[in-house]
Image (cartoon, rainbow, N blue to C red; front, side, top):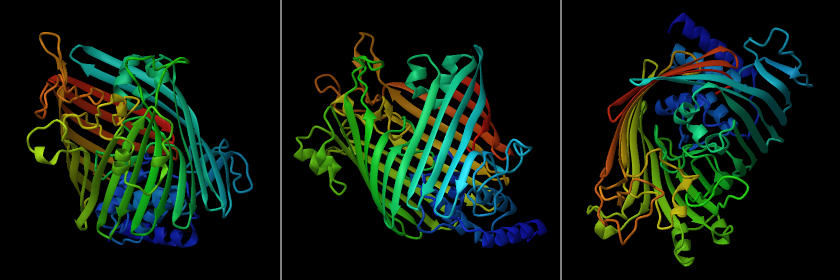
Length: 547
C-alpha cells in the first residue's frame, strides 16, 4: 500500500467516525454522477441487496451505499479520492458550507471570498437533527459545434434556475428544481437535433420561444411503507445503456406511487399521467385537444446478495377519466383489461441483475407487449417483444468496461388504437430504440479520482423504417410506434429490419472536471456516421450545479 493510499484511508476513517449522516428522504436526480460510481461498486460486489434498476434513489440510500463502499480496504487511490468527494457532498464527512442568506445553522458568507472555494454553496441552508432545507442556484452555458462535409454549424445556450430539497421530521422528503434557458447564438435547429430534452419542450420546439423545465416530488416514508407524488425523470429496468420499461427518452410524467421496501424485497405501484398527442388534431395552444392518457405500472423485486430479479407489469389506457379498477395497487392488469372489455394496451416484463462473481455483472430485461404462442418463429406481426442484455466488468485498474445488445421487434409498443401506444408526447416511454431496431454497444468508464469518469462509448444501431412505395402507397413494416397495423392493408408477416434501412455508427468521448466546488466543466466529442453521412460534434459546458 502506498503512503498516499494509506493517508487517504486514515483520513477517511477518522472523519467517518466524527460525522453522523441524518435521514434524508428525498430523491437524488438520475443525472447525478454518483450513480456511475455506485455502478462500479455494485459490479465489484461491494453492495449486497442493492439495486440500480429503479432510479432515482433516496439520498439516505446513497449515503448508506457510500458508507458501505468506504469500509472496503482494497479501494484504489483514484476510487478513494472519488469516494471522499461524494462522502463530503452527502455529509458523511465534515463539510464546510457557504450561504448568501444566513440561518441559525449556517453563517459563512459565500460572497466574501468563498465563491470559488471547496465550500458547498447555497442561497440559504438550514439544518437540525430532524429538519433541513437546501436552496441553491443552477446555471450553465453550453457551446455545440458540428462539422460536416457541407459546412460547420454551431449553437450556444444559456440556462439559469433554482433547486430546493430537504427532509422534514425524518419522514417527509421534498425536491423541486426549475430552470429557464435561451439560445444565446447560433442555429436553433442544431440545438433541437443535439440536445434531447429540448425536443421534449413544447415552448421551444413548437412555439419557437425560450425553454423551461421543472421537476419536483414529495415523498413520505414510515418504516417499510412509502408514498410519492411528483414529476421526475425515472429509469426502470436492468441495463447498462438501455432501460426497456421506463427511461428519460420522453418527458417526465406526473405520477402517484405507493410501495413497500425491505432489505431483500421491494414492491412499487405507480399511476402516471401521459400526453396522448393526436397528429390529426391541434395539440398546442389554448384550443388544443389532447385526450386523457394514463400509464399504470407495478414492479416486484427480490434482491438476494448476488443481484436482483424483478417482475414488471404495465398498462396504457386513454380517453376516459381515471379508472378505479387500475387504482388497486395489488392486481393483475391483464385480467383487469379483459374484464373491462379489452380496450387497453397491457404489457409485462422481467429484469435481472446477476453477479456470478465479484467484478462481473450481467444485466438484462425482457419486455413482452403481445404474443401468439403458436406463431412464435413465423414472423407473425403481433409477436411484439423487446429485450436487452449486457455485461459490465470492473477492472482492477480503475476502469469499467461493458458490452450490451438491445433489440426491439417490429410493432412493439404499438396498439390498434394509436393513442394507446407506449408513448408520452409521441416519444417512447421506455426504449430509446424505435420498433424494428437493434443496437450493440461497447463502453468504458475510467476513474481518475475526479467526480466524473472519462467515458467512452462505441455503438452500432440498425433501424428499418416505414416508407412509401413507387405508387405512393404507405408501407408499414412496424417501424413507427404511432402507426397502427391495418389488417386490411398491412402484411401479417414481418421481417426484422425490413423497410428503409438506417445504419448509425457512433463514437462518444466525454469527461468532466470540477474546477471548484459547484463549478464543473464538461467536454464531449461525438463521431456519427448515418448511412455513410459523417458528422463530428464538439460540446463544451460550464455549469454551476452538481450535475
